[in-house]
Image (cartoon, rainbow, N blue to C red; front, side, top):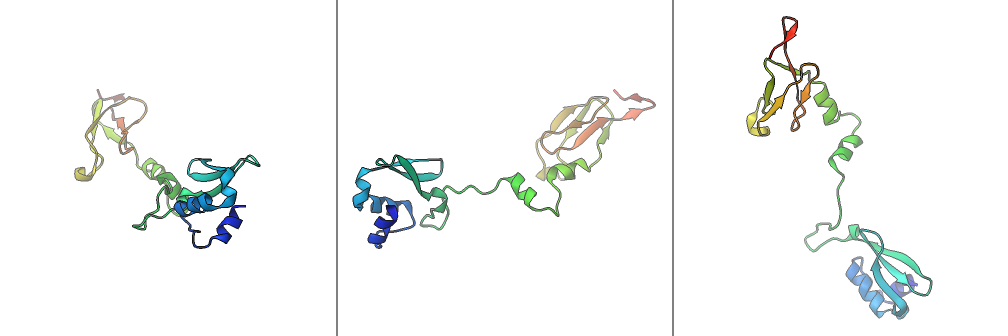
Length: 152
């Protein structure tokens, strides 16, 4: 039904939603249709006679005047790393770094050697048995064992 309308009015058929809505408004079949949202990111037409929703266009296909795609979400950071099999994930890279031994019960993490690119100073209370992890960079710290006992 919608294809008949689009084919009958080629001047009104546009890939953007605005053009599709204009076709629906002027189409003789659209009189008993109600435009509504079906799923997030999808525009649909509800045909009252058949009681079915028909997806007409996804918002990910919309391109604005300045050429940017609207409503499109790129892959998240984890998905980007999972696509490349030749590289290790950030979690694997940080797990290869051995825990840093500290004399005392508190470690001050600045994110590595270059403090300009690091994170705020994070004070981490150390457990004597297991490494403690910095929540910003993932570096692990452990209390140094001195003479068979842990330094306090």
